[in-house]
Image (cartoon, rainbow, N blue to C red; front, side):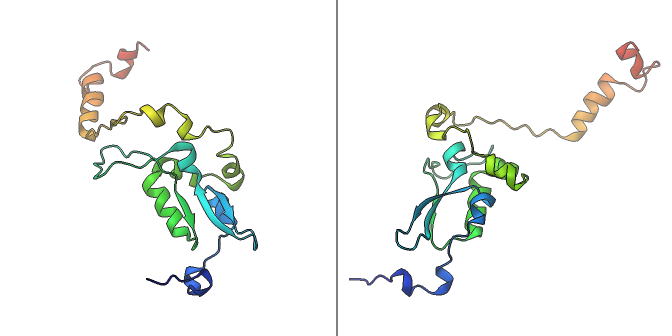
Length: 161
């Protein structure tokens, strides 16, 4: 029968304690504490709780996306939070990173949990459609068809100015 190592026998690199500043910086919620020491033993991703996992338009998934909320235990590493947010919540994470600390503290207040929304139950498979249009096509349509350079009166005649 394999032996398991207790937390005190783990090398120092595997015992990284939770830093309270990461709660706001990475949008985390403390889920559990050690009853004797008061140390944080698990945290939860608030983006998963309130927004669910984002689907990236045009990305082909090899397996079905999970509805599970991401939780972390020790060791608590900022790289793990950042990697999860970039891959699972790219739009909301990019928006969140631009906020100051006061705005980050209010970001998740008065939000409904994703599991309680209709989208969590009936979200269409491909809800996002992205069109990539070459700049030359746009220039041709707008620049030459609407505002043709041979028009003797120019742009003003189009708008009756």
